[in-house]
Amino acid sequence: MPRTGDILGYARVSTPDQDLSGQRDRLTQKGAVRVFDDIISGKTFDRPGLTALLDYARPGDTLVVIRLDRLGRSLTELLKTVDDLKAREINLISLEEQIDTTSAAGELVFHVFGAIAHFERRLISERTKDGLAAARKHGRNPGRPPLQPETISALQKLVKA
Image (cartoon, rainbow, N blue to C red; front, top):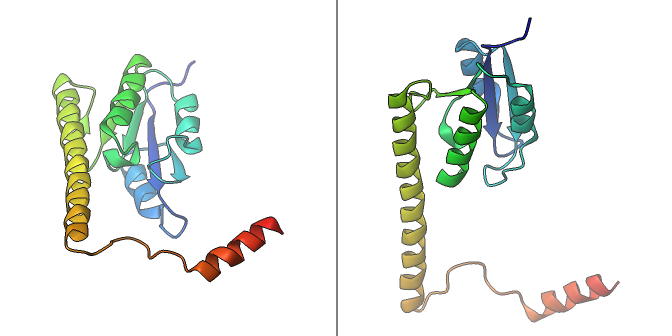
């Protein structure tokens, strides 16, 4: 008899010093029979844990995440992932945003939240660029200070060696 209808959890943290146990606990409490995880930046879309989950998942299963940002950082990534899940008849539930794509309303809410998150990231980027431009206009040069000539020389010697 084929296995269907499982709840599968996906947890992700960006760095090894962050802890996955809180996400794992919440996913298990939600009914996840298996939790897949990654310790990798959200900017990287090559995530072995997520790939393993998608290889394991079958039609009728449900992928549960704590927050949408665990699946991807951009609206494009999230939409692609959800479209792939939908094509494979795998549902998505996000606990924090209370999104459940098994319903039309849940799918709509997902798209609205994704658009808002994308908008927020764009605003942050624009504010950062505006702040840098304002600093330069006032004679400040934000960012790392330039390397000293002796440091550059030492680095060049190391490369040659």
